[in-house]
Image 1 (cartoon, each protein chain N blue to C red):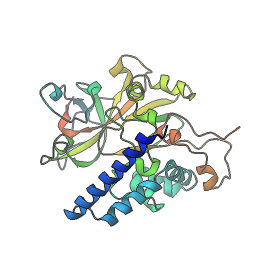
Image 2 (cartoon, one colour):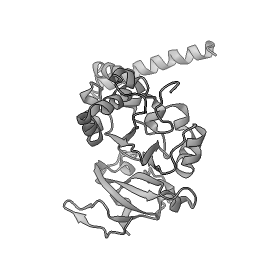
Image 3 (cartoon, chains in turn blue, cyan):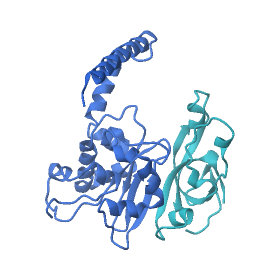
Image 4 (tube, rainbow over the protein chains, first blue to last red):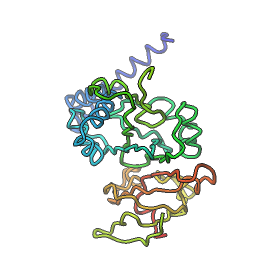
Amino acid sequence: MAGPGVRIEEIEGEQLLGALAALLAAKGIVTPAEITAQIAATDTASPAQGARMVAKAWTDPAYRVLMLADGTRAAESLGIPMRGAPPLGVLEDTAGLHHLVVCTLCSCYPRAVLGYPPFWYKSAAYRARAVRDPRGVLAEWGTVLAPEVRLRIVDSTADYRWMVLPLRPPGTAGWSEERLASLVRETDMIGVTLPEVPGG
Amino acid sequence: MAGVAVMSVPGGRVAAGSRVRVRDNWPETRGKVHIRTPHYLRGQVGTVVRHLGDFPNPEELAFARPAQILPLYHVVFEQPVIWREGRAGDQLLVEVFGSWLDPA
């Protein structure tokens, strides 16, 4: 769909960004170096970061304790930039309890560890239905919870950002952290799906 | 969950396990506001899980006004009670500022 109109918007965007950055620097609010550092931090944010944390928690009991107590420190200990990010809370799934994260008021999302939110997470439909018909939403994702599993929907309304620490899937005994991390998807850390072994 | 009277702890915080009611208050009907308490919780009773920290009041921050530092709580609500449908035992866990909570 890239036409001439799109290109013009990009140029205008660059000019606006340049003008804004110059103003911020002139007023002593933010330096160009700080902006560059923040852009770098934003660019490294992706679900792969959260997946590293999950895989480490699956294999390292001490890290699991840290992650559940203080998600921000746990992320920083893996070199994930958290400066300026809201505090990160981690929700521990167990054999009897599954978590599902939503932000009904807007689109609060743990961007530092999961990157940009997927489009559906920001949709009015997901935000409304996750709190009212959560099991219906899960069924549409093909996620089936055992009958005895309770569901906790976490509405991210204020100053924290939340990610799910899902259960380690069966059939992964002896796997390395890297291999485990490759299993974990953003949807697993939102809670609409469960990590699974491909073909398993 | 068993009803527990609201207990203050040092610093004026509400203790974990306290039963609380979200204020049935609708400031959005009275003018421009920015509110982090979802509609579906107004007037509902829940249980404090823990104090998450103290944060500047977003209702003031949004308008660049001086913001009071308020305690933020994780409060759990029975999901089928709120929506009158759903599975018994399913719960909603929501961040609610202390300024929106009364003893229940």
